[in-house]
Image (cartoon, rainbow, N blue to C red; front, top):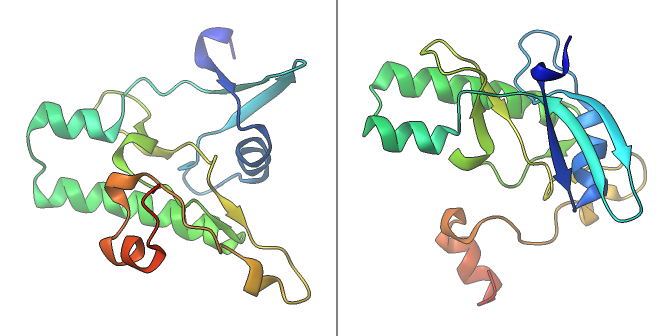
Length: 157
């Protein structure tokens, strides 16, 4: 593959995003953005990932104005399939939103790629690891459920 097939992202929240992207590889349908190579400098990590030319799901919703039910079902099926695969590996994305879902290409038949694993949590195996798994509230404020905000009583969300 030539370099025109890659897109280089500068990542500052190094560890989680990089490790998760390198760990997941979905053979059936690649719904998780693929990482080809990682380069490290003194203060940054560079990830060479798939080039997704179709834009964000959010942009496509705004451009189209609305989705038909079959279109929405198609997108949600891909997102749930990708999330299910992540969960089978013990990974919770924790920031799924239209801005973190990219279309692989601009066509109507494009697959969706799940991106931005910076807030993800990985379940550790053994011991009492489930009690410490996902104890922090995180995500994008506009997408956090009101009941979660109420429980936390944290105005910084």
